[in-house]
Length: 251
Image 1 (cartoon, one colour):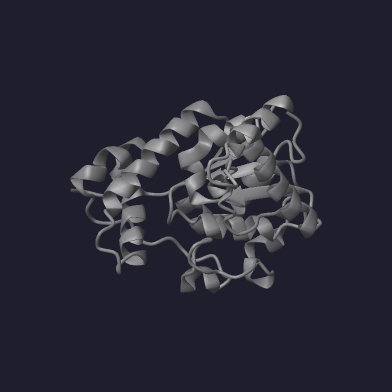
Image 2 (cartoon, helix red, strand yellow; image 1 turned 30 degrees about the vertical axis):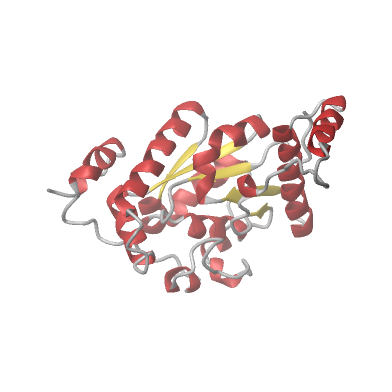
Protein backbone atom coordinates (compact mmCIF):
# COMPACT_ATOMS: atom_id res chain seq x y z
CA UNK A 1 0.00 0.00 0.00
CA UNK A 2 1.28 3.45 -0.92
CA UNK A 3 2.72 5.47 1.96
CA UNK A 4 2.97 9.22 2.37
CA UNK A 5 6.43 8.55 3.80
CA UNK A 6 7.71 5.54 1.84
CA UNK A 7 11.22 5.33 3.30
CA UNK A 8 11.42 6.62 6.89
CA UNK A 9 14.48 5.86 8.99
CA UNK A 10 14.08 4.06 12.32
CA UNK A 11 16.58 3.92 15.15
CA UNK A 12 16.48 0.48 16.74
CA UNK A 13 18.17 0.32 20.13
CA UNK A 14 17.72 -0.71 23.74
CA UNK A 15 16.82 2.05 26.20
CA UNK A 16 19.68 4.03 27.75
CA UNK A 17 21.83 3.51 24.66
CA UNK A 18 22.28 7.13 23.65
CA UNK A 19 19.36 7.23 21.23
CA UNK A 20 18.28 10.70 22.40
CA UNK A 21 21.82 11.96 21.76
CA UNK A 22 21.77 10.35 18.32
CA UNK A 23 18.40 11.85 17.42
CA UNK A 24 19.53 15.30 18.64
CA UNK A 25 22.65 15.12 16.47
CA UNK A 26 20.59 14.01 13.46
CA UNK A 27 17.92 16.64 14.08
CA UNK A 28 20.66 19.28 13.88
CA UNK A 29 21.08 18.49 10.17
CA UNK A 30 19.42 20.94 7.79
CA UNK A 31 17.64 18.11 5.92
CA UNK A 32 16.82 15.67 8.74
CA UNK A 33 13.94 15.85 11.20
CA UNK A 34 14.39 13.57 14.19
CA UNK A 35 11.59 14.35 16.65
CA UNK A 36 11.19 13.14 20.22
CA UNK A 37 9.83 9.62 20.77
CA UNK A 38 6.50 9.34 18.94
CA UNK A 39 5.51 5.91 20.31
CA UNK A 40 3.83 5.09 17.00
CA UNK A 41 3.17 1.44 17.87
CA UNK A 42 1.15 2.55 20.91
CA UNK A 43 -1.27 4.36 18.59
CA UNK A 44 -3.99 1.84 17.82
CA UNK A 45 -7.22 1.63 15.83
CA UNK A 46 -10.13 -0.14 17.50
CA UNK A 47 -13.73 -1.07 16.72
CA UNK A 48 -16.26 0.09 19.29
CA UNK A 49 -19.92 -0.69 19.91
CA UNK A 50 -21.71 2.62 20.34
CA UNK A 51 -24.81 1.24 22.05
CA UNK A 52 -25.65 -1.70 24.29
CA UNK A 53 -26.96 -4.62 22.31
CA UNK A 54 -25.76 -3.26 18.99
CA UNK A 55 -23.02 -4.92 17.00
CA UNK A 56 -21.58 -1.79 15.46
CA UNK A 57 -18.07 -3.20 15.87
CA UNK A 58 -19.09 -5.82 13.31
CA UNK A 59 -20.31 -3.05 11.03
CA UNK A 60 -16.89 -1.44 11.25
CA UNK A 61 -15.31 -4.73 10.15
CA UNK A 62 -17.67 -4.91 7.20
CA UNK A 63 -16.90 -1.32 6.23
CA UNK A 64 -13.14 -1.83 6.46
CA UNK A 65 -13.42 -5.06 4.48
CA UNK A 66 -15.26 -3.30 1.71
CA UNK A 67 -12.35 -0.91 1.23
CA UNK A 68 -9.77 -3.67 1.63
CA UNK A 69 -8.41 -2.78 5.05
CA UNK A 70 -7.79 -4.73 8.22
CA UNK A 71 -7.46 -3.05 11.61
CA UNK A 72 -3.69 -3.50 11.40
CA UNK A 73 -3.61 -1.85 8.00
CA UNK A 74 -5.73 1.03 9.31
CA UNK A 75 -3.17 1.45 12.09
CA UNK A 76 -0.43 1.57 9.48
CA UNK A 77 -2.25 4.43 7.75
CA UNK A 78 -2.43 6.26 11.07
CA UNK A 79 1.27 5.78 11.81
CA UNK A 80 2.22 6.93 8.32
CA UNK A 81 0.04 10.01 8.64
CA UNK A 82 1.67 10.95 11.96
CA UNK A 83 5.14 10.72 10.42
CA UNK A 84 3.98 12.75 7.43
CA UNK A 85 2.52 15.39 9.74
CA UNK A 86 5.81 15.67 11.64
CA UNK A 87 7.97 15.84 8.53
CA UNK A 88 5.72 18.41 6.85
CA UNK A 89 5.65 20.52 10.01
CA UNK A 90 9.46 20.53 10.14
CA UNK A 91 9.95 21.66 6.55
CA UNK A 92 12.75 19.13 6.12
CA UNK A 93 13.15 16.21 3.71
CA UNK A 94 14.02 13.09 5.76
CA UNK A 95 12.47 11.82 8.98
CA UNK A 96 14.18 9.64 11.58
CA UNK A 97 11.98 8.03 14.21
CA UNK A 98 13.60 7.14 17.51
CA UNK A 99 11.53 5.27 20.09
CA UNK A 100 13.13 2.57 22.20
CA UNK A 101 10.09 0.28 21.92
CA UNK A 102 10.54 0.27 18.13
CA UNK A 103 12.96 -2.61 18.44
CA UNK A 104 10.32 -4.67 20.26
CA UNK A 105 7.89 -4.01 17.39
CA UNK A 106 10.25 -4.16 14.44
CA UNK A 107 8.15 -6.73 12.58
CA UNK A 108 5.10 -4.44 12.51
CA UNK A 109 7.28 -1.51 11.46
CA UNK A 110 8.81 -3.52 8.63
CA UNK A 111 5.35 -4.66 7.57
CA UNK A 112 4.07 -1.09 7.53
CA UNK A 113 7.08 0.36 5.71
CA UNK A 114 8.77 -2.20 3.40
CA UNK A 115 11.04 0.61 2.20
CA UNK A 116 12.17 1.73 5.65
CA UNK A 117 15.84 2.06 6.56
CA UNK A 118 17.32 1.22 9.95
CA UNK A 119 20.01 2.47 12.28
CA UNK A 120 21.10 -0.12 14.84
CA UNK A 121 22.48 1.61 17.93
CA UNK A 122 24.49 -0.62 20.27
CA UNK A 123 25.89 -0.01 23.72
CA UNK A 124 27.66 -2.19 26.27
CA UNK A 125 24.78 -4.18 27.85
CA UNK A 126 26.38 -3.83 31.28
CA UNK A 127 26.25 -0.05 30.89
CA UNK A 128 22.64 -0.26 29.73
CA UNK A 129 21.62 -2.19 32.84
CA UNK A 130 23.58 0.20 35.06
CA UNK A 131 21.99 3.25 33.44
CA UNK A 132 18.52 1.73 33.72
CA UNK A 133 19.09 1.04 37.42
CA UNK A 134 20.09 4.67 38.00
CA UNK A 135 17.23 6.07 35.90
CA UNK A 136 14.66 3.88 37.66
CA UNK A 137 16.13 3.94 41.15
CA UNK A 138 12.66 4.74 42.47
CA UNK A 139 11.29 1.53 40.94
CA UNK A 140 12.89 -1.45 42.71
CA UNK A 141 10.25 -3.68 41.10
CA UNK A 142 11.91 -3.27 37.68
CA UNK A 143 14.47 -5.96 36.92
CA UNK A 144 16.94 -3.91 34.90
CA UNK A 145 19.08 -6.90 33.93
CA UNK A 146 16.07 -8.84 32.62
CA UNK A 147 14.89 -5.76 30.75
CA UNK A 148 18.32 -5.33 29.19
CA UNK A 149 18.36 -8.97 28.07
CA UNK A 150 14.88 -8.58 26.52
CA UNK A 151 16.05 -5.68 24.38
CA UNK A 152 19.30 -7.42 23.46
CA UNK A 153 17.32 -10.41 22.19
CA UNK A 154 15.03 -8.14 20.16
CA UNK A 155 18.00 -6.25 18.72
CA UNK A 156 19.66 -9.48 17.63
CA UNK A 157 16.48 -10.65 15.89
CA UNK A 158 15.97 -7.34 14.13
CA UNK A 159 19.60 -7.07 13.05
CA UNK A 160 19.48 -10.58 11.58
CA UNK A 161 16.36 -9.80 9.55
CA UNK A 162 16.76 -6.19 8.47
CA UNK A 163 19.44 -4.31 6.53
CA UNK A 164 20.85 -1.21 8.13
CA UNK A 165 23.76 0.74 9.54
CA UNK A 166 25.44 -0.16 12.82
CA UNK A 167 26.44 2.51 15.34
CA UNK A 168 28.04 2.10 18.74
CA UNK A 169 27.30 4.60 21.47
CA UNK A 170 30.94 4.41 22.51
CA UNK A 171 32.04 5.48 19.01
CA UNK A 172 29.43 8.24 18.82
CA UNK A 173 30.75 9.77 22.05
CA UNK A 174 34.47 9.09 21.61
CA UNK A 175 34.78 9.67 17.84
CA UNK A 176 31.71 11.72 16.94
CA UNK A 177 32.91 13.22 13.66
CA UNK A 178 34.01 9.92 12.14
CA UNK A 179 30.86 8.19 13.34
CA UNK A 180 28.45 10.86 12.14
CA UNK A 181 30.21 11.26 8.80
CA UNK A 182 29.65 7.55 8.12
CA UNK A 183 26.04 7.91 9.22
CA UNK A 184 25.47 10.80 6.82
CA UNK A 185 26.93 8.76 3.99
CA UNK A 186 24.52 5.91 4.76
CA UNK A 187 21.56 8.30 4.82
CA UNK A 188 22.64 9.99 1.60
CA UNK A 189 22.97 13.48 3.04
CA UNK A 190 26.03 15.75 3.15
CA UNK A 191 28.08 15.93 6.34
CA UNK A 192 27.41 19.11 8.31
CA UNK A 193 29.91 19.90 11.10
CA UNK A 194 27.27 21.83 13.07
CA UNK A 195 25.53 18.52 13.79
CA UNK A 196 28.05 17.88 16.56
CA UNK A 197 27.01 21.09 18.33
CA UNK A 198 23.44 19.96 18.83
CA UNK A 199 22.95 22.34 21.75
CA UNK A 200 22.79 25.24 19.29
CA UNK A 201 19.47 23.95 17.91
CA UNK A 202 15.96 23.53 19.28
CA UNK A 203 15.12 19.85 19.67
CA UNK A 204 12.07 20.24 21.87
CA UNK A 205 11.82 19.49 25.56
CA UNK A 206 13.89 16.73 27.12
CA UNK A 207 11.43 15.05 29.48
CA UNK A 208 10.84 11.54 30.79
CA UNK A 209 8.56 9.48 28.56
CA UNK A 210 9.72 10.79 25.18
CA UNK A 211 13.48 10.35 25.52
CA UNK A 212 16.39 11.03 27.84
CA UNK A 213 15.87 13.78 30.40
CA UNK A 214 19.25 13.76 32.17
CA UNK A 215 21.59 16.69 32.72
CA UNK A 216 23.98 15.03 30.27
CA UNK A 217 21.66 15.39 27.28
CA UNK A 218 20.50 18.83 28.44
CA UNK A 219 24.12 20.03 28.36
CA UNK A 220 23.95 20.28 24.57
CA UNK A 221 27.46 18.84 24.32
CA UNK A 222 28.52 15.33 23.33
CA UNK A 223 30.00 13.88 26.51
CA UNK A 224 32.83 11.30 26.55
CA UNK A 225 31.73 7.72 27.27
CA UNK A 226 31.70 6.38 30.80
CA UNK A 227 34.54 4.00 31.69
CA UNK A 228 33.77 0.32 31.10
CA UNK A 229 32.53 -1.48 34.24
CA UNK A 230 35.09 -3.59 36.05
CA UNK A 231 32.63 -6.46 36.38
CA UNK A 232 29.86 -7.98 34.28
CA UNK A 233 27.02 -9.89 35.90
CA UNK A 234 26.75 -13.52 34.92
CA UNK A 235 23.32 -12.87 33.38
CA UNK A 236 24.80 -10.36 30.91
CA UNK A 237 28.03 -12.12 30.01
CA UNK A 238 26.67 -13.76 26.87
CA UNK A 239 25.10 -10.50 25.68
CA UNK A 240 28.33 -8.58 26.26
CA UNK A 241 30.29 -11.26 24.45
CA UNK A 242 27.91 -11.36 21.48
CA UNK A 243 28.14 -7.59 21.06
CA UNK A 244 31.92 -7.53 21.42
CA UNK A 245 32.12 -5.93 24.85
CA UNK A 246 33.22 -8.76 27.10
CA UNK A 247 36.91 -8.08 26.47
CA UNK A 248 36.43 -4.66 28.08
CA UNK A 249 35.66 -6.15 31.48
CA UNK A 250 36.55 -8.99 33.76
CA UNK A 251 34.45 -11.08 36.05
